[in-house]
Structure formats: C-alpha cells, structure tokens
Amino acid sequence: MRKVAIILAVGWALAAAGPPQGQSAPKPRIVPIRWELDFEHQTPQPITVVLRGENRPRTYWYLLYTVTNSTQADQIFVPSFVLYTDSGQVLHAGDKISTGVFAAIQKRHNNPHLRNVAAITGRILQGQDNARDGVAIWRDFDPRARAFDVFAGGLSGEQVKIKLPTPVQTTAKDDQGKTVTVTQSEAILSKTLQLKYAIPGEAPARARTGAKLLKKEWIMR
Image (cartoon, rainbow, N blue to C red):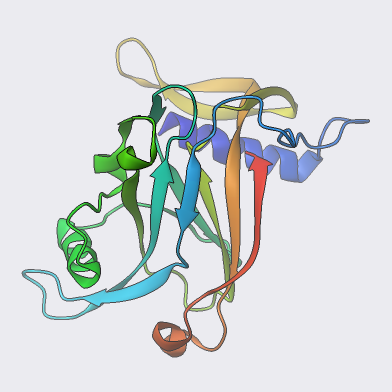
C-alpha cells in the first residue's frame, strides 16, 4: 500500500508543479536497456456475474493477456494493472474481486491455464513454451466515464530515479508496524505500458459496444 500511496502522491506533485525547471519528464529508452517481457493483450471487456449468496448481477471488466519471457534469463514477474477513468476514478486489478468472477471468466474462455494477478506473480521461465495466460479484473467503473487508461506494470526492469519538484508526504509502516508519515523527495519511476481506450455510447450499451483502443505507448511511471 505504501507504493500505491507514493505513486499517487508523486503523480499529484508532478501534475501540480510539473517537471523541474529545464527538465522534461523522463521517457523510456528507444532501445530497451534492461530486461523486458513480451506482452500480448486483448481489449478489455465486461462480464456480468451473479455471485453466490447474492440475487442481483454485478458487472466487472477484465483484460486477457499473455506474457512471454524472451530475455536471456528467468525473470520475476510482479504485475500491476491500474485503470484510470477520465472522470477521475482509480481502480486496481484484483481489488475486491471475488473468486467467482475469475471462475466465470475462465469458464467463458474455456482456458484452464488462465491465472489472475495473484496466481501469475512469480518466476517466468524463458521461452515460448513457458508463456503464461493472465487476466486483470476490475470492478465496474463510473458510468459517466467516456474513456479510460490501463497502466500495465512489472513488464520491464528499466527504472529511473527523479527528484520531485515538491516533496510529498505519504504513509508507511515503521519497524513496530505502526503507520507513520514520511516525506518523499525522490521517486523511482518504472517503465510501464499505457493503453488508452474510448468507450462509445452510454453506460447501458457498454456490453455491446465495448472499448476501443486509441493509443499504446511505453512511459515512465
């Protein structure tokens, strides 16, 4: 949770003050300088599920992907999928998601090898034969939203340390496990894949219209 708080605090600080004077926001190298996993993905889509013990359906969104290690060494894959809507909502994949939702998605696609974010985390062996199929799942988002971004992290080892234009305060656990406030003057940004989507039509029609990919690029986040 501390990492999440730092990321949000850093984002607000950079948005408010911009990059340090005379400097532009850091960008990934054109030619990768660290390990990078191959990432194939489908367009996010909705699924409506009636969970056990409930009598009304709930809608969720999910993104199917395949990750392959084509590097020269085994890598530790710690995925992170964050969805931001143009209305300001932030959703983390796997947050408050019942196992019943994952089971419904796995059944829909008839893929016994499919793994959620928690289950796919770990060592990725080299080669196409060791590719893994994963799914990122979010709760349904704001019906007012007309666009959203998905930030896929954990796919690259490229990082850069930056000095924040304005120090920010966030929370952390001390050695005794107590929550304390710390001041952050630097941040480490990681190479992250940003997927930008538009959502045509009104909220009730989302299941039919789906999302449309507008842009795909690597950023430092």
